[in-house]
Image 1 (cartoon, rainbow, N blue to C red):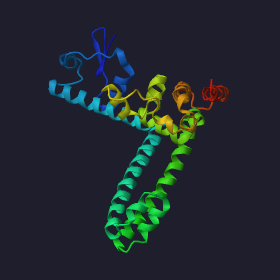
Image 2 (cartoon, one colour; image 1 turned 135 degrees about the vertical axis):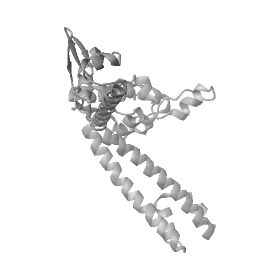
Image 3 (tube, one colour; image 1 turned 180 degrees about the vertical axis):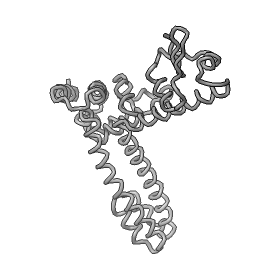
Length: 281
């Protein structure tokens, strides 16, 4: 039997599969590598189409339906919402920083001595802006403060969602760092397929390109530097800790992708190995 996207040909007899794009898309997916796309005249002889124009229109509609179905599947993956949450968090950080920098320049026009206070940063900075003599600037300060509160709530939500989507990865480095690693990789599936050396420098794009151009040493860590085990380690041991942590994160990501549940035995051994890497020789 010869199986085509538009129907089956068996012993000189052809059975058309109909004209519904959704049904044809399902047929194309089901056939997979067995799918045959012949000359349009075969479909005409089969009675599936009346001419070449109808053949192309029907095939186009089926391909569009198949693409829509696959996009819907990708968007419904368990890590997609978390991915959007992390990217939104990064955008909020960017917006807050831009607004804060502009507000500081604005306040410096009103109070030239404010630039020295700006260096101290923190809550005192926002409070000073919200007490400015300029009503519009006070409004900007209130909006920045509101964005900061939204950012804190979103960060907590990201961490909680990461504990569900990435239980093993989150257990090793915390929900927020785990989510940022996944976002840097482009999703849980790409993260689970990466080697440890790549995971180790995820997020260090600028440093990596500088190294490739020959103007800087190779980076020893990227996003994982945000984890306390790496940034609290002695400088001479950070590379080793980052390397061991990245190797364990790869395994954790694969368990998360294929099993989707915490592996306590693995986590216990991984934590012990990472702790040992941070001890002086």
